[in-house]
Image 1 (cartoon, rainbow, N blue to C red):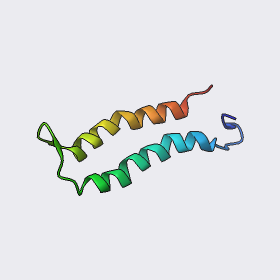
Image 2: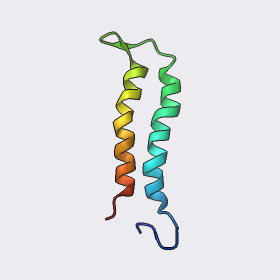
Image 3: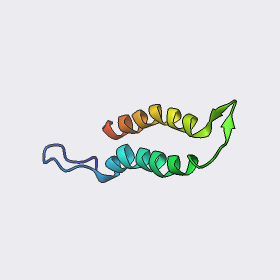
Image 4: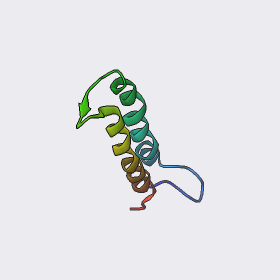
Length: 68
């Protein structure tokens, strides 16, 4: 269930969490937010979104690596 490290087969749910979630949260959403001119306290929303996802991507990768 957690992937078989000895045979090298990954657990695809963990790969989706570690790579898929950050990819989907950054690439398509950032493309959409790039067209908006919204700001929060003078900072564009796209910039805030990207800086929020820096630690969230690390969190996703850390959760992906954890063994149950």
